[in-house]
Image 1 (cartoon, rainbow, N blue to C red):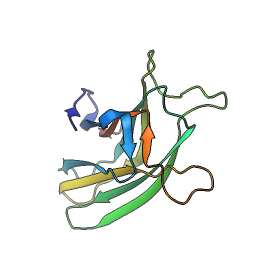
Image 2: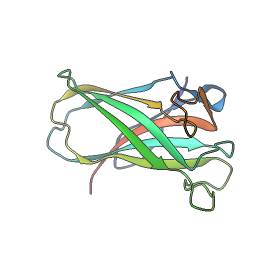
Image 3: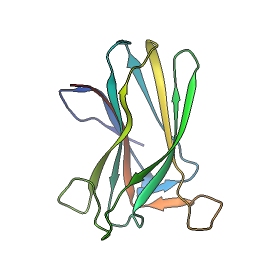
Image 4: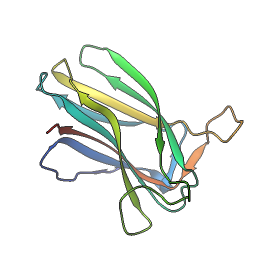
Length: 150
């Protein structure tokens, strides 16, 4: 998996990892490490998803794990809307690739200085199924970013 970086004046961290064959496997955890020095100022954290027209769902379920330098772990199961009622993808972009900037934590204060680890995996299931979808088609890149609040 390669990493891509983008620029943003408010960004304190911004990285992407490519998903092989645009198919996010159920057991594939995507991990980002970042350093927090400022433990006072609130920050916005985002999950960034690039999907293409092969993505067949109107939503996305993910399980996240935020590991603090002091070994505290916060696990969340999150759902994001990916398409409107007419099936049009909500992300930005003029081509078949849509960029989705999804709030993970709003105005979050990271209370401990040091190296954090953020892990995300997909948790999509077909209706009535217990097991996750083995390979979620249409997900090209998964990213994580942290921005200063205004």
